[in-house]
Amino acid sequence: MRARLPVRARLSVPARPPVPAPRPLPAPPPGRAPRRSPTRPERAARALVLAGTALSVAGALHAAVNTRLLRRPPVPAPPVQGRLAVVLPVRDEAIQVAGCLAAVLDQRGVPDLQVLVVDDGSTDGTPGLVTAIGDARVRLLRAAPPTAGWLGKPNACAQGAAAAGKAEVLVFVDADVRLMPDALASAVALLRAHDLDLVSPWPRQLVGSTAERLVQPLQQWLWATLLPLRLAERSPRPSLAAANGQFLVVRRAAYERAGGHAAVRGQVLEDIALLRAVKAAGGRGVVVDGSTLAACRMYDGWPAVRDGYAKSLWSAVGGSPAAAAAAALALSIGWLLPPVAALAGSRAGLAGYLAGVAGRAVTAAATGGRVWPDALAHPVSVLLLDVLVARSLRGRRRGNLHWRGRSLPAGPATTGRTGQPSAPGERSWTTMAR
Image 1 (cartoon, rainbow, N blue to C red):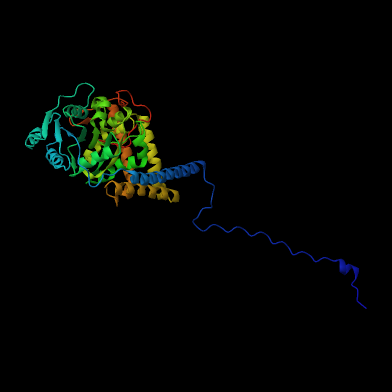
Image 2 (image 1 turned 90 degrees about the horizontal axis):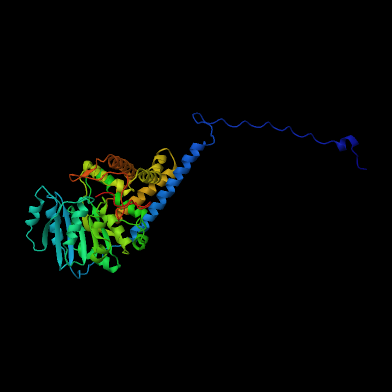
């Protein structure tokens, strides 16, 4: 018979074990403060760094695409059909003019070549050096002094173009440019092959001093990063333009339809203004690769860089303090803020810095520039550009800008292609100074 437990024993429930007390959180390691939520200014700063990094990455990608789309000269270049006139404006170019003319006269594939050297009041013996060349293709013109409303270079270029006779193509070249033997034939081939009215073959920029290495590559980097080349080639919008007066090739008919240099008589940056005038008259034009066609050392040393950019950067960013501030701010957010944040340990900032370096390196490799280690100093280049913009605007406002012994006009705003104030957005980020 089965033994039965007492009722009390059968109904008893085992007692629950006691609940252990919660363990205290471990103390932070010595020297490390407890984590806290970021403040509103910190969140805003992080968002700004992320925005700058996004801008830098987008710019690098655009530069990579642009440099692939950059039109390049044909090899070999076909001979030029018809007369071609080279206009060479000079003012105190005794050091440069002989070398420039030797390269121009050494061109291949240009059977009907005319060279018009326009002396703009030189006092250093430049005209005598031109006369000593002794080549029947070279003609020396003494430019009439610029009248009211005209700057020196547009005045000289206009007089040279007027003397070009029946030339079908006009080529404007600066004295410090050295053309390769096929430069003219190649540039004209690009002009005709793509049904363009103006091409600006961007010469390979030679640099020597640290200041030149920091500043000069920004010219190509700016248009490669900010200007959609294929759209600029087709669009009539004046803001979508890049040109470099060091080497400019234009159809004579398009030049005259645009009003020639008379249409840009008061422009410090007459090269980009001329392209805008050509576009406004229904023409098409764009910057093309000239790194294998020409070379130029634009400035020699920091004083020349400083003074050269002072005369024209106010125009390159729209000619007003507001436009200059906007340009400097955009450049600083995209290509200066991320590397500064990277120094403070920001991974996003590091990504932005590397993107900026990549964009600079891609552009330099595609345009004949120096890639390493110069690209690593890209933030310093942007900072220096900000400083030069501020200096140019200050000089413009005070009316103390000079170039080649002449005073430049003072005032708060630049003028557009017809002499009227430029419309918003008509800014050149691409031809920084000349």
